[in-house]
Amino acid sequence: MPALWKRVARGLGQSFDCAVAERSRLRVSLSLWLPTRVGMRARSDIELIERACADWDADAHQDALDDLQRAAQRLLPVLPQIPLLPWQLRRRMNKIEAAICCLARQPGFFPQMFHGVALLGDGSFQRMDADEARHLSGRGLLAGEDIHALRKIGTRLHRQTAAPLRIVEIGSAAGGGSTRIVGDMVKRHGGTLYSVDPWPGLMHRVFLANLQIFDLEGVVVPLRGTSAEAAARFADGSLDGVFLDGSHIYEDVLADIDAYLPKIRKGGILFGHDLYDVPSRFDRGELLGIAAVNNAVAGHRDGRGEVERVDVHPGVILAVQDRFGDDIEHFPDSAVWAKQL
Ligand SMILES: C[S@@+](CC[C@H](N)C(=O)[O-])C[C@H]1O[C@@H](n2cnc3c(N)ncnc32)[C@H](O)[C@@H]1O
Image (cartoon, rainbow, N blue to C red; front, side, top):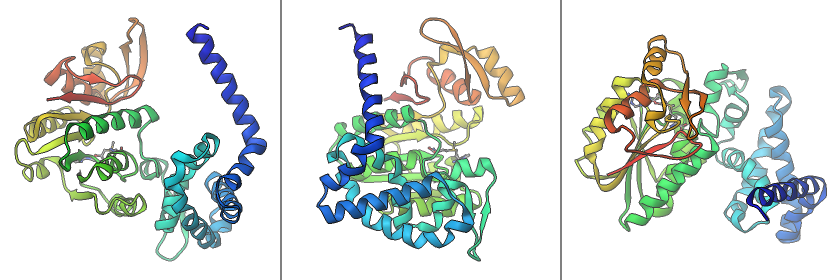
């Protein structure tokens, strides 16, 4: 069967499976998979958390936080079994995994991260500004393909050495994105992730809560300050990897590349976010124009030479162009680039 038809057939099969699973199979599979008493309870716990994830009415749910926390604490030990669960159930659990961790370990941050509603000191709630809410969200700002790319880079570093890993992340924001992905990888391998960010205002508290929520307190060392301030802490050749996602201003990205490249050992990896294709596919003049008006939409030529419009950070693309040209690896469909030393 030609590859395209195979994909269509697989896609149709999957949507059929999903539809059936939504109606019935999913509802029983956890009960079948786990001992009956645990399975029945887990089923209702999952449904409770799913309902709270889909819809949050601050007034109605304020009292529900205790129940939600208890449900999440019961489900937390089930999470390590996710790879063993049937795929329909795994998908369903994956969707609420971050919420389970958040509710079990830090329920106060659940409305904030999943619904953009901040819990105030007096116990009342306040809707947050949309941009702030997006930054604080439990999943961070990375797209699915970015996560995939970071995991691939992690696997490479993991295979290169048996020694504990030393990785620096510049720009962590609330810690739900790259900190969590790279932190999980470092936790599995052994080692330390140094997270560098000035963390203005509320962001610092949320970052620390996220370390607790994602069980990364023993793995991540937060270094509050700018990348320039933190650079002096690391000796030349002492790091396995550095991830750049801090300031996106051209001069700052150049300075980050220049400050951290010598800190990486031979064979280690400098990697970063916000590069949507190899640098030469972007028009330098257009990027300079965009940088001047601080806008963020540009065209780049894809592999077939067709121009696509994308949201870009011109400072990042221009800085990578100027230091490495196209001599970097770009991960398809993601905004992640890497330079192996
Ligand atoms: C795009 S966000 C990072 C997103 C994060 N990596 C994620 O995956 O969710 C950029 C972060 O860089 C931080 N930042 C800005 N300038 C910085 C600098 N000079 N040094 C370190 N961090 C910086 C900001 O405070 C912000 O939290």
